[in-house]
Image (cartoon, helix red, strand yellow):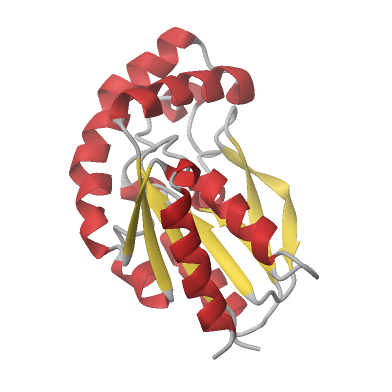
Length: 206
């Protein structure tokens, strides 16, 4: 069984995960859909002192273990079982545990930098960019990083100013030109999401 790979990109907190979950809810009968977060493939920084780990630019393509991600996606598309790494955002290291991914009809890869890389784009059947206003993304980022990742307000704002916004302008925003579909406002754009669902359904029937 050859799987369909859908790439969902967009800026930080743009609503990529919500769109991915919408697809999963629609086509997820009998476990047909598996979502892979690009964030799971951050490089393990266990070899660095903790102070240096906090200064790594996590919004730059070099922070990602893209070689491993390409290897895993290539295997998964062919119907092989893959062990997805688990990343600890507080320690910036990989857990010894993994998530075992059995073959699925639809694989969704979501992340800010997935359309920036040509090797990843070449594996995708559909390339989507979720386009959301900067101020909304910043508010969501602050709420998420404080609640889910244990960061302070000051550290989130500092990170946004020093790396998130500059890297968005340098790498994420320009990658929008590679998208097959641009969905403004994410799942709030029901027409755009419906068009995506129609395309996925057509690919499943081929």
